Image (cartoon, rainbow, N blue to C red; front, side):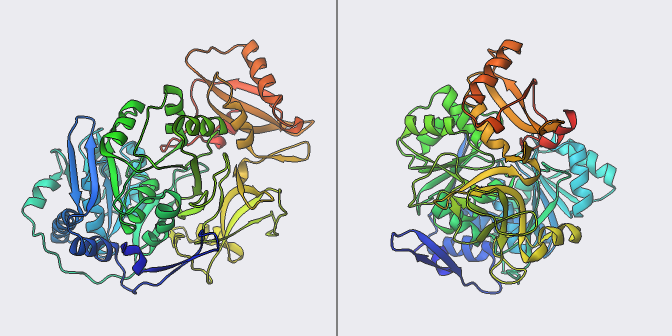
Length: 544
């Protein structure tokens, strides 16, 4: 029996589709002890991690391995005074040491702060200054040690510094320290309500916010793994995400291990579609999750056969229907789209047992009570755009939703106003109960008295062969209130011209209702983006 069944009750409808999930767990639940160590005790040889890199190296770790190495790291951390509530930053790319260090921090009751290696010195300064870290564990690659040292110099803090997979000046090597540490570790008292991790948002609408989740957070990803990604007991799940982002928690550890699936980890820097497919086929990946960007590359470059792959999912941004159709035609696998935030787990998705519809976020997760509400908190009618809000199970408490913003109670109270969690995201529900994403509520374009979601226009734009990347915004217009403007990055074989601009307008406007017509087009060489690769519409509006 998968270990997750010990903590929840699944309730299904007459068609066998998950209708509700109820949890029961001890006050001291801790993923490190109660999932990793318990699995290691009962199934010591069960696969946990299958890891490889671009150099051809590979490692396969069992749960007993993870228990051993996490215990060793926990002892190293403990010897340096790291304990319950202390904050430790991990900048470990896709190195396998991330999984050992993460579990070690959970066992200690310390707060893990994942961060991407792509951060600049200024980004590190911002995060270090805000979070009050006690230690950093980082890769030696991508000049990360140098950037961290520069950030520490600027912030005047003095954390303990460790590096992995190599030596760096000013850093102790964690791999060496582990070798001399005991593989036994006595359980430390922690609470399920203790803070477990701190993620910084990608900052699409402002400075990144520190989002804090507690030790119950892994439970909420059971639905993510089992009913959306369809990870299987003794299967191999592959989510393409770097460990610095919340997507890694969605697809590379918690839900997957709870349902008994191993995780595939491919340690790379530069994405290559052929190498990615080669990894899937070489190791027999059974379920796969990636952002739309990956699928766009795969579709453009051609998709080889992937005989072991049973399920494919996507999230992070909206997927153009054209990409959905081509991927499904090539592989026979429909793409199951999903939606959520750093502050939450999976809020909506095309779930197991239902036929996915291209472009739709699907239906609300059985874990959440979700509604669409208007500007003044009123429910909106079917087909009307409203804000996605989460109604908690009990006042001020909802499993899977963050417990606070770092040192920003005012912002936390604002998003939790009126007794519900305001996502700030806009959507509408069709007559079949499916939800359709319309971007951030602030991104809605109001033109001629109509409200237009940018994504529906962007999806049509992406069907034009010249469009490599695009973003749609509203700009002031004396007649319409706002006019719809498309900002476009062209494919390498195309060049900007007035003829191409007219061609793209005609191509799109022929497929759009008149009030959704593109009135302006600007060709750019690149988009303003967050460090996570999300387009910053706020910057585009400033530039227009």
